[in-house]
Structure formats: structure tokens, C-alpha cells
Amino acid sequence: MNTKPTYEQLLSRIQELEVQRQQASPPIISEEHLVWLESTPVCNKAVDLDFNLKYMNAAGVKALKIDDVEKYYGKPYPFSFYPESFKRAMTKCMNKAIETKQVVTQESPITNLENVRIWYHSTITPVLDSNANVDYLIISSIDITESKVAEQALSQHSVMLETIVSKRTQYLEKEIKERRQSEQKITYLANHDELTQLANRYLLFGRLKQACVRAEIEDTKVAVLFIDLDGFKLINDKMGHDFGDQVLIEQAKRISCCLRDTDTAARYGGDEFVVLLTDVRDIRSIEKVAKRLRVSLNQPVMINNLSVNLSASIGISFFPDHTLIPKELISQADKAMYQVKNKGKNGFQFVVNTLCLKV
Image (tube, rainbow, N blue to C red; front, side, top):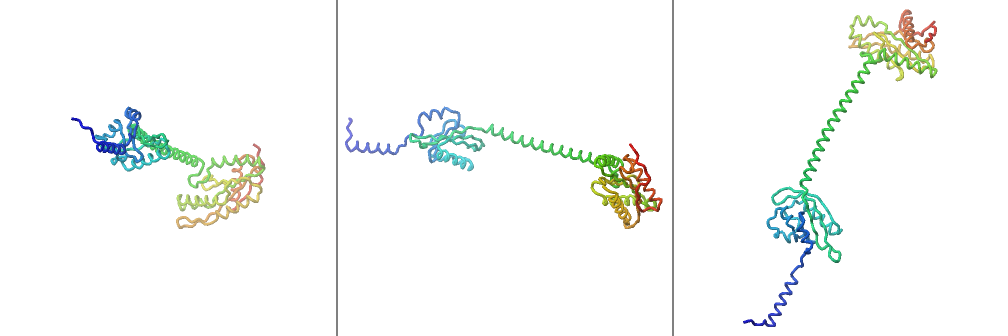
């Protein structure tokens, strides 16, 4: 037998329903959004403005290998099993999406419940209500682990390739440098005396020709000083060739010190040296050089605590006065040097009584 509820019972039921209505929350996601989010193979999540999880689609549950997703509803996202770095990055992006009402993206690695490291590209989309305020966030994540691994492998390969290329480049640069140094050394040896490091005959003749051509154009003179060390043969015979070589090295240094950078000192052979002076304007400048050479070469030479004394006989010719033929300048200076020898050595003399030879 049905009895009608009393007024008090109806009033109590109405009050109970009102309380339930007030306590009930409207669904955070519309049916339209739910259908779309569930239909995509992308890991989709919906969170409220306090970042509490309200929804995760089947693809997300499968990707994260979560047995009971409902126990995560109402809990803060990112979940506790995510790395702290991921939590900080994602929280920053969600706050930015709310503040700007714009879509925000980020890439970062996470570790799922089976402790597997996965790279995700996440897109945080703010969903606006009718008043254009952010209602909730949809977070869509796609697994980019394979492409990330390939990218890292490619990066490592690039680094390895760069290392190989760099080492190969360094090797080639070293090889080129050594080859150039070898070529420079060969060129130097081909143009210089091995003992004294002065110019040899080949380099002397080349510079002499160039100097004469330039002097003819500029209307200047070229002087050749032929030097022979007095008494060297006796020292060489008594003290030995090694000792004699040291004497030649020392005297070669002294000759070089008496000259300008534009002049040339050459070892002509044995104890004979030739000095080439360019851009000569007057004979007095030649005499000054000859006097400096004579004084310097007359100084005692100390070798292995033994002191020896030498002097020098110097013959001088100059272009174009004595000859217009470059090599003949050396012959003329040589003859003048022997005239000094015949007069008692230890001095210098210019070429005399010589007609200018025509080429």
C-alpha cells in the first residue's frame, strides 16, 4: 500500500537534492572535446587551472602504461613519477599558456612507470569559456623518442665526423707546413754557403746582375769588394781544418755586421769573400765600408781559448766605371786584391788603369 510522503518528507528531499546540486561540479570537458580527444592516437590530457588531472585518453594511458588512470584524476599534473626537470618545465609552460592564452610547446624527456625514458613533444592549448577566460588546458603529447634518438645519433656522428675532418685537416696543414719548410730549406741551401750561411756564388751572381740593371736605371753605382784573409792558410795547416772552419764562421759574421741589410756578403771559396754594395752614390761611402771591414777582420779571433790574428786584403771595383759586365766586376776586384797582396797585404785598393768593357 502506497502512502503519500508527508510535507516534511518532501521538504527534506528537496533540501537534499539542492545540496547535491550545489556540491556537484559541471563536467570540465564538453562532449564534443571528449570525442575528439579520445579519437586521436596522441596522448591527450585535460587539467584545470590548478593543474589537477581531469581526463586522460586511452592513447595516453597506453603510452604511460598506467593500470588505473582514475586514481590520478584530481591529482596534480605532472605526476610524482615524472623527473623534477620535466615538472618544472611543464609547470612553466602551463602557466605561460594561462597568462598569454596562447598555445605553448616544449620538448623534454620523461620516465614512465616502467622506468623507460621517453621523449615527448607537448602542446599546451588553453580552452576559453564564453567570457574569453581560460577554462582548462588540453595537453597533447606525442612520442618523438625514435626521431630524438636518430637526431642524437646524427649529432654524435657529426661530431665524430668533424673530429675526423679536424684531425685530417691538422695533419694536412702539418704536412704542408713541413713541405714548405723543406722547400724553403732546400732553396736556402741552394743559395747559401753551408759553413758560413752567407750567400754562395749562385745567389751572388743573381743579385749582382739585378743590382747592375737597377743602377743603370737609377744612375747609381754598384761596388764589389773582393776579400782574402791574410795568413789563413798557415792557421789552417797548423791548427787543422775544424779550427779553420771556426775562424771562417767568425770572420763571416764580422763581415755581415759591417754591411747594410740591402748589401750582400758571399763566400766565394776557401778564405775568399765578396761583398756587394748597392745604391752607391759616391766613392767615399765605399771607402768607409772597406775601412770598417779591415778594422773588424784585423781583430783577434778566439777559438777554444786560443787567439789567432789575421788581416785582410781587399780589392774594389764598381759599376759602371770599371766594367759594364757584372761578372767582370768580380774579376777586376780580384785583381785589385792581389795588388794589395803584392804591396804587403792588410789594406784595400780600387781598380786602376782599366778600360770600361762594353757588353
